[in-house]
Image (cartoon, rainbow, N blue to C red; front, side, top):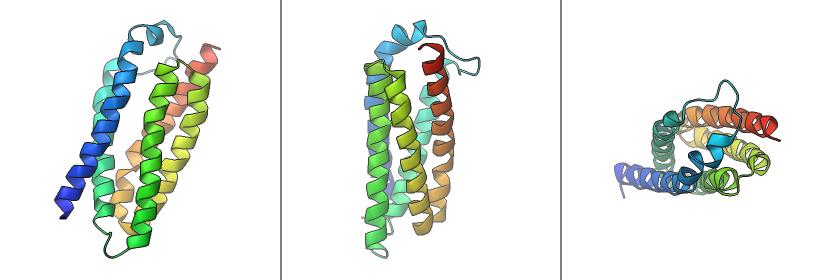
Length: 158
């Protein structure tokens, strides 16, 4: 399998996770989420879909670049992709906790774990392919912002 195929598969997997998460989110956006008090820095709802789409594409490219090194660095790549898959699952779980269960506090605890897993994935990816690691920086920054937003929403609505 060549590099482009690996990148394409990784992007499709990431976008599929994003799509499944959005299904949990959609019904709560106009109902429950609309009733919550939000901080002044809360972005408009329309911004989330394009930002997440871009982030999932960058994540897929990063994972594909790392996956492409499987022959040269087998064990390191397997470990890095293991962390990547864990953070991807945690990403999906956050939407379920926040929007599905309508539990900002539980989602806040989980998003901290998510951010830590993204950071560990970044460290592992950077050792294998620097560009792959760098592609995770916007994701790490956005999830950091999302954690602050999550904490603020929890605080304002407790």
